[in-house]
Image: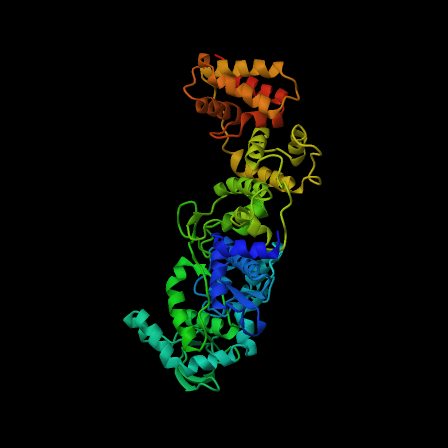
Length: 535
């Protein structure tokens, strides 16, 4: 495929990353002035441990970045991952140690609160390090910028001066959005108390915009005059966001649906400052298994570590790619399907025409860090099949056992020859240990189900040990169709097999399972089920 063919196909693609990238193409029809790189930004509030909602914003923004590069034939871009670690800690998260330490420092900037984990310079530094660790693990190309570094080193002083210069106009944007009581104490600028180090929510008086001098009353009633420069103040959230867009010249930033109003107000403020609101996507929020919004402080969503324990890196990225404007639940139960769907899309990619490739999630995911799919990229067994296998093996199943069974199905069955399958085996064993084995219950077969199982056992005894999965599937299929066994539908027969042999309400193609598990071992399962059914 030539670069021109790719650009042409990308410009008419309906895939959402290309639709977003088109906004930037319209913003800069001739490219950004002076050949400057288009700046993408993601924001992170380190008041709690990073979660998948944080990670997905970096991933999705990177997908748009790569789409824009494809649309333009390689126009320069940058991605800034910004941490708002000058924000004051409002409440103690539920999922961190040493809560008393944080309680004693409520209201102070996150970067000036001791680390409750005892490993970093501050609470913010700890959480920032966790975020960067995960982003680095996935190989994202980004520049990390923290608010505390910019505020403290004077990097935002010029923009802060402009905020003070346009103080009244900014108040004109914000005050109509506030309740009457809040209007009395609202200020776009939040000074930091020289006495307590707390970020103050108090009215201020601008004395000199050029030097950043303001006047306010401290918590002890003392009148204070000090500059906002050098980390002695920060801005209210919506004003801070606008100031950041202005100071860093941000061209693209997406956000969750809960920030819709913030986008509107911050967009007005950045124009007052003389900047331009960035392009962006407003995405739907993730929900937990109870349909409730995920919260960093509650810790009620899946962490990145949890997903990567029970799934794979590719499956996480795949799940986050799909339908960003639709709300999706995040819990362990969604992982197996995501693992298998990723590999289905990847297997299809190489044989698709260019327009279909650009609509394939894997095309985009492989380009986040410069990879490409090869012809026929696939894995030899599904994750669902592995879960059924380890479920039969029990809670104490080992990787060595699984690979020995995979030898019935896969050439060179070892993790060195099949690294992607090795990751799936690891995840399947963890899922089985924590979720499947504790809940599996094999029921006794009914009389007609027992007769069908005896027939299946007889036919399995008659075929060779090397019978193909398709041959075995046909045997299962024909027994289910035989009216002598009284199944109303084939679905009833398959359900009986899953519940009596595997201890699950759902399962794989039985031919594939028998080929993987082995005919002799499957006959032992049948014998156990018939023994339970015996009077």
